[in-house]
Image 1 (tube, rainbow, N blue to C red):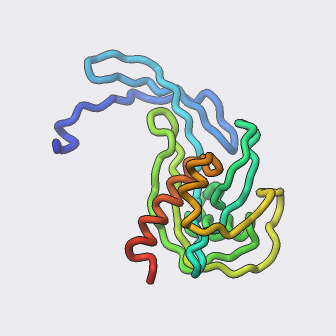
Image 2: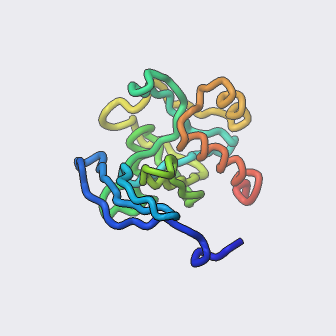
Image 3: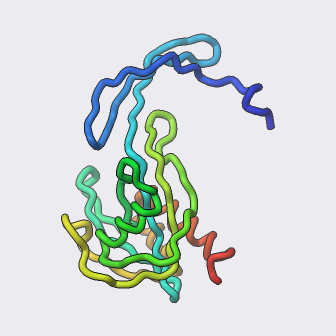
Length: 187
């Protein structure tokens, strides 16, 4: 494999902000591709998100049944949310689980970070896994889910095949958690 110095890469000459609010920033980047063609490319910037796979002692995962209005579609999702400015992503992960489900996760560790729409969207997702959770109250604030349930990990492949699990954070989180369980996570 060639080292980075030998690879051809796009050159970014600058970026100008087109739209900005609390949730999304849209820019136009002045880029030059290998071979010399130069043009403007849209870039979407979103805040980082922290998502948590909460597993209990019976290898069940805490999931929320949610409606996503953009697609007018229901599905099972992991709890998660945006990382506040200056907040540690693990703190966000723990806070979001508690706010959205009423459970406080235990033994939380980082699983993986990824970009769900590489190419023109900067939206880093940080996935965590928690082994165990304590019910500390009811979900807070706005209604996050129609149902909150502990689902056996053994049922996840058939739920994915049926389309009941379809969002990137949940798919990646559950698949990575399965790898974690098959390795060092059982102890």
